[in-house]
Image 1 (cartoon, rainbow, N blue to C red):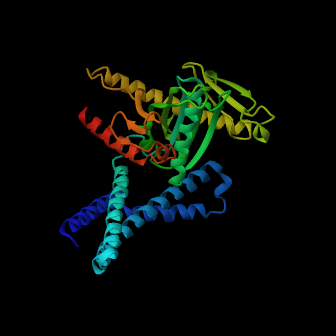
Image 2: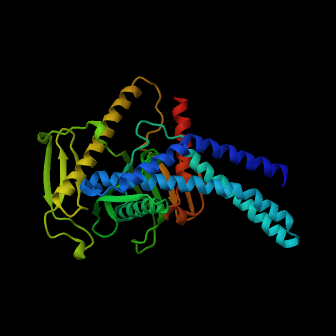
Length: 372
């Protein structure tokens, strides 16, 4: 094995050991056993909310253990791949060496991706995430773009075995969606996805323009931490207006025939949220209340941050500013405007392969925070 290859493998081993130490593999194994015991309890589902929390935590912990174990096994196998390549001759040796090099490159990317998780140490980073997507300027194209973004995040979650719970979708008249609210139910999702917050811009030939003109569309992504009981966001009934209505959707039997959908208006702030995903009015009201609490918690944190920012002369960029461009015409590119990361294959990004953007966003945020 070449000295530079040996040194690179040793560097990968050091990085992975650091990740394993931060995650605390033994503690993670203990946590899995505890959650498995809770999940096996015969009265688990007597409290549905608690049961969902336990099963979600267990699935996440098991997934983390599989990822760590898989990376460790691949790293242990890597020197063997090089030894086997050296034992081959001719074209077989070249092919085996190329395969080993490709695995080393892929392994570095996967280890660095997991290493980013160790950077998530914010107050709410370990929470589940509540994602709101709203169509912006661009008419029907913007509504279609908002739906494309929602699919991108749902596909990303599915690739990682993270559960997604849709709370509300407001469909546009012709195509796409006006807005959507959904939760990604796994630990550290807020810290992970919060770097996706901001305005996303799409440039393409409009499929809705019979003259085939180029269209620029915008959609806003908002990411909030899911509220927990320890947050103490109390909302008096006198501050709420509750409206019920029939769920709407793309037709068929999925559209409710009863007034089960719920819209909550927080009178002091004017914040409005709705939920129509659940079958009963009571469940929809509970889900809408969780969304409202998350928005109020975020508002509280923004006000606190504004007070701190008022003491500074820094006028840096806002999370609400345009943060990523997706260009499908006249060329193919996705570019993050904060990190300068570019990918020349928008289709794979829109299919949920956004880990590189998330990783670079987290590293950028850490550098930006350290510079303050």
